[in-house]
Amino acid sequence: MVKHLSLKKNTAGKDYVVGDIHGCFAQLEQVLEMLNFDPTKDRLIAVGDLIDRGDENLEALEYLNKEWFYSIIGNHEAMHIAQDFDGHYQKGMAWAYGYYLNKLRLRIKNLYQRYQKALEKESNLKEHIYVGRIMKKFNLPELDRFEENGVVTYDLEEKPVVDEAKEAIYWQLVQKMHQLPLMIDIETDHGLIGVVHAEIPMVYKSWNEAINLGANISDDKLNDSNLIWSRARIGYYETQSTRWDYASKVSGVSLIICGHTIVEEAMVIGNHYFIDTGLSLTMRKDYFDVKAALTVIDITSRLEHRFDFKHGNLVNQVIYDVQDIELQ
Ligand SMILES: [Mn+2]
Image (cartoon, rainbow, N blue to C red; front, side, top):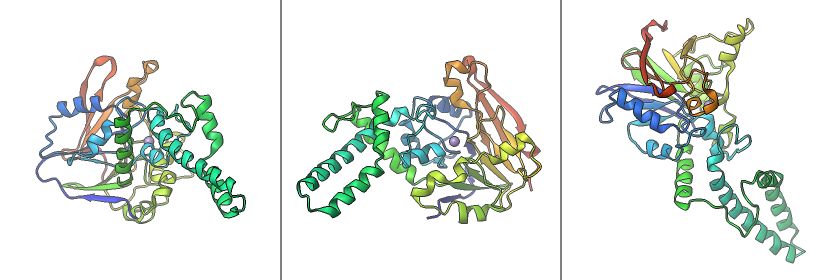
């Protein structure tokens, strides 16, 4: 299934593309107010990674239900779909742990009961093999690790303490994440603007090639997609690699706006425009020295807005007109 969405030109209002929000929706709301965002005619397109790291995660569902809000799928959404909770502390996924484990506990409990029934009927070899295979799939050593971390008591009778209303919202949110596209393009007066979470890998020469090959993917492969994980272009740019054409332009679009890799200030490589300026870092007390801000691109007026939340100061600073970027 091709996970791609095309948006027609917004003839009534403005279109904005916003960097990684990572559970900081209160800050996003402040920014929308400062931009005089008008939900009756403006649209907001997020580069993905709406969740994890910050405290406001279930709020993502409210946003995804608004008709003026669009989002790409980021690697953080893909990890929740895949229930890949490895490295959860580092990636800020702990908030969803209880919901996930409660569901897993119910599945294991059913399976365990089925396994015990199968044991009673010793002759039922087929059932033994089936259950054994599934138990393996559930990765039981990993459950032991959860127990060690004190996140949950792995007891089939004991339910993890979770807020049931929030748990229901979480699973609705995961369902909604399944439907998000990997690539969005938007018609504007100055050409087609693409949005993708990480980057268009150098192997794809055109936007359409990336749609047909990269965004044509099943849900179980989502979390492996380099459209949401790759950091090759920035990595090669930083090392000034002579082996790779990291600044090669992707044809078929004027500009590709991405998040994922944190940059101190939004930057352009080829026709990729990296805008994740690390909003979630502002939430961390130990990051008092880093530059961190939310960057929003007004693709209708070609303006870059940078909102710095450090020390409670909100600075709406227009860095440069996007027309300065050499468009093809
Ligand atoms: Mn990311």
